[in-house]
Image 1 (cartoon, one colour):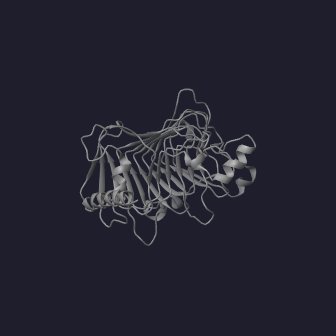
Image 2 (cartoon, one colour):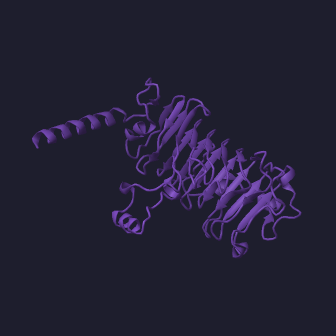
Image 3 (cartoon, rainbow, N blue to C red):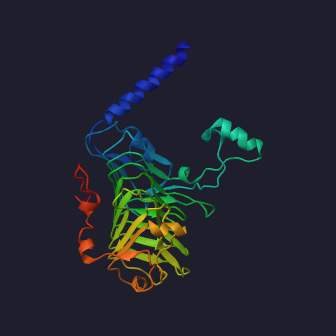
Length: 338
């Protein structure tokens, strides 16, 4: 018993000493080839002090990191920066229809379902490759991928925190690639590439997409916003380039996952595959509440003469008020472009 306690105390003291040695604004280097301080990104996040009041960079060298990562709520002010966007890849392959293990589901529920001859499935919201629960997190020059086969929903990025910034990143997947998972939180995507099949940008957050490349791989829906009724803004796509695979013939800009979904495409390039109606109601009654907007888009898919009657074009006066400052306006003066 005493030997076990001594061993535990020894491990604890080493862990505390290691965490303390990283309690500073110096950069941490992660490399799969062993040339960094850590070989896994999760290990580097683990040594960061809770609620840091300084900026901490985790620099990730080129390589493929097969990790299911959570950035916990008590970590903040971290920047994860890849050496090369296309060659620094965080990947995992969970999808919604994978059977749960006993350790990941309440025991009573597992027993009840197994008694019926069934085992619970993972479900959409446990499939993430990267889950960000913290505030004030930045990702740069890195790829986040869910490379599961098309067997169900498979989230690459799941966000919970506020003031999250993504610069020159790639988000790869099929259905449900990017889940902006918390109402009223603010996300900024700058010059990012996002691809998927169905509803591959979805959720209740307020998110601004600046000069992003959005690539559609199948006939389906690009967005599925679930913006709360009292949130003034949801998804804003500004100067984005929407493209489609060669096999795609029919696309919708979005459908409302919940009643008051808000999505705006402005100054975007829309491909010919955007169907004339532009938008889908998902459920007929949502035509009365969904907030679906466009302004001065270009391309073959930008013709609005046959757009769904319950969507509308902004006036020039209205469009003047759609600025990053107004969309993200709070008392904290967060300015993600700085």
